[in-house]
Amino acid sequence: MAKINVLQSSVYNKIAAGEVVERPASIVKELVENSIDAGAKKLEIYVENGGLTTIQVIDDGCGIECDSVETAFLNHATSKISNETDLEKISTLGFRGEALSSIAAVTKVEIITKTKSDEFGTKLMLEGGCKTFKDIIGAPIGTSIKISDLFFNTPARKKFLKKPSGETAEITNLVQRLILANPDIAIKYASNSNIIYNSQGTGLESAIFAVYDKNTLSSCKKINWFYKDIEVCGYIGDKNFTKPNRTYQTVIVNGRYVNNNTVCTAVQRAFDRYLTTRAYPFFVLNVKLPPEKVDVNVHPNKLEVKFEDSQSVFYAVYIPVKEILDHDNKSMPEIELSNSQNNIKQSQAIINNEESLSLKNNVETKLPFDSEKEFFKSFLRPQQSFISPKLSAPEFTLQNDNKEDIYVEQETTKIFFEESITIGTAFDTYIIIQNQDNLYFVDQHAAHEMMLYDEFMLNFDKNKNIKQALLIPYIFNAKPDEREFILKNITKIQDCGFMIEEFGSSSFKISEVPLMFANADLEQFANSFLENLSTEKIDIKFIKEKIAKAACKAAVKAGNKLLPDDIEQLKKNLDKSDTLRCPHGRPVIVKITKREIEKWFKRVF
Image 1 (cartoon, helix red, strand yellow):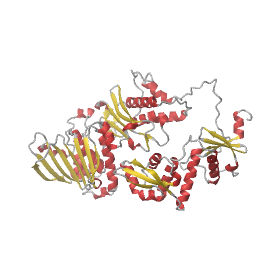
Image 2 (cartoon, one colour; image 1 turned 180 degrees about the vertical axis):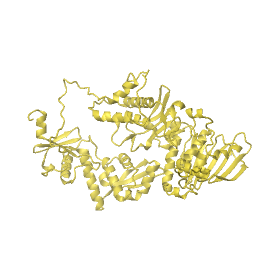
Image 3 (cartoon, rainbow, N blue to C red; image 1 turned 135 degrees about the vertical axis):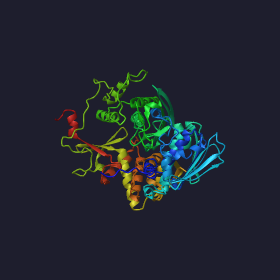
Image 4 (spheres, rainbow, N blue to C red; image 1 turned 90 degrees about the vertical axis):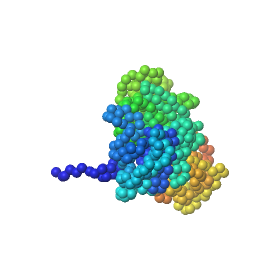
């Protein structure tokens, strides 16, 4: 058997740092949470070079007593808990006592702190966890802690970090969440001497205004809901205020920003009937419940929590969100024939989640279902149509006895749509074309997308994309990760015919677009373009594809009434296209044979 070694503190602190200090943003999180736990009402965060050079957090909290400053940097030293029973009802953000010792092990630290009872403050300096200087000093009440030279003694860790711009984006995203989770604390954040955020600490409305833009609140509805011992408060975007990714969703549990599938899924399910593909609701929701009913000790960085009763949390979030959305829906209720199998699969996935939604006690409240059990069973029931069976027409399924794809990709005989008969349009969305013994349903939106995409790609390859100046430039805000993505690829975007430039610290301006996209919805274009930013494949081909798909998606819409000349032009383009699928992979045409229709009416068998 190999010899068992007891590791020195200098070694195990560096190992612990691997969990706690994943990147500069991790340090910012731990330091800010310590300040919040210290009762700070005002916070200042300064970062240089993405935190690789310097991170400084200054607060007006209670400070640390002179004889306890060195103790604070010992492993598992904490003021948050004192015995085992405290772990059952944690109400502070930090509690493990790992953060400061782990941070000090891989950085150079300077801390200046003073309590109300101390006459003077204390200044302590450490390097790699070892004290290099300590003295008394004049200082205001509170704490200033400065972290320098991250991973100076573990250079192998540095190669796993992003570039400074990428680390800055990570920190900025984190500070956004901290501002939203602590709306009553004034938080100032600056990067490389540029002020990014400066929240006033006057409530959630001002916090949302500081993080996003002035139009966000006007597109949101306020939530303040109580269920059992759970309170859900915050803001949810209306059904028309959606975002291209989930980074605009903020879940706060007892004042702590977390990633939580139960809350996010509850909101998503409430929005189900209102969302289009790849559209995500905006929300900032704070779920408050007794500390003993939530486990915050399930993740090294405390980014995940586990609820004692996940079902009740789901219920408490889903109901108020759905009520707000349904109340705002002024149009006639829509009756849909839902896909029961999809319903079952989606609901089963929720119930089989890591935080399973077990069926428990009855609910004593006026809600759409008599019990939580009935509520969750409703997700598993096939949704029924309200059309009377006596009045409804027979339902038929498009069957294909030969197992051939009914989507038209390649026909054995070339079809010339331009020479075919246009029967008309259905729902101002589907063009119906007759060719010999076949009917073809053409999705006008998908067909137009395909046409624009092909034209854009052809013109780009031949350098013939003519630009059109916009009468009123389009200005949009971008989150830190989106901003980094655009700045990294701004030359490639401009080469594709979109004149885009920075317009302030977090905004961009589009002043020219390719002529063929002059009438496109630029808001939808920006949202589509900023979908799925996680890819590492960043070259001109990738950017060209991403722009083309986003611009096409923002062009023609289902429901737009086309003139006969427009339909004929689309038919011509169908004849020219090599593939009959839109840039996003959806089919452009579906074929129904005359024989299939005759089967519907029992003329043939």
